Image 1 (tube, rainbow, N blue to C red):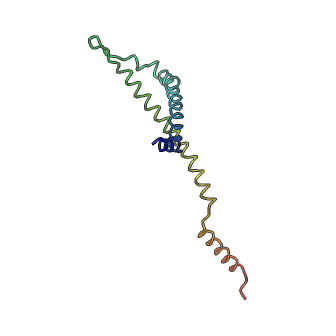
Image 2 (cartoon, helix red, strand yellow):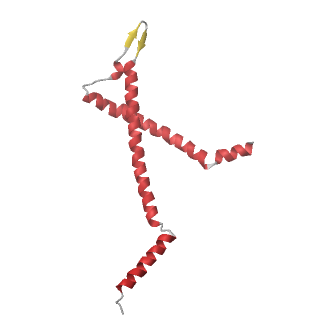
Image 3 (spheres, rainbow, N blue to C red):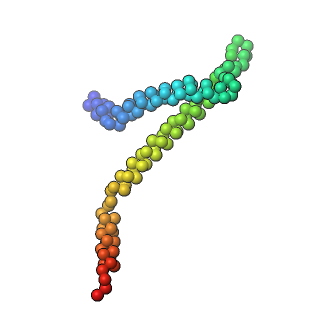
Length: 129
């Protein structure tokens, strides 16, 4: 059982997943800071110093902070849009790499067709006898 666990834990997929989680966590902190510390203050400034977090409703001794909820929802949409844009940019670069790889690899059928084309071209350029 221990050997099976070691094989599982050392597989590339598990290690890749762990690295992805760690990098994703760090990236999440960066995006959260971007939204919280830069984007939302700018939005608040454009709206005349508007801050959702101050909205609350007092119900007896408890306080319902619906403004904080609205702020969290806005943060979520901005963060998810930022991640969406980042992923789209990465996909665009990946597609360009795939296209260049496809252009470089010519299969045997295409190579044969190109040879036939070249032979026909040579034949048509020769004068008739």
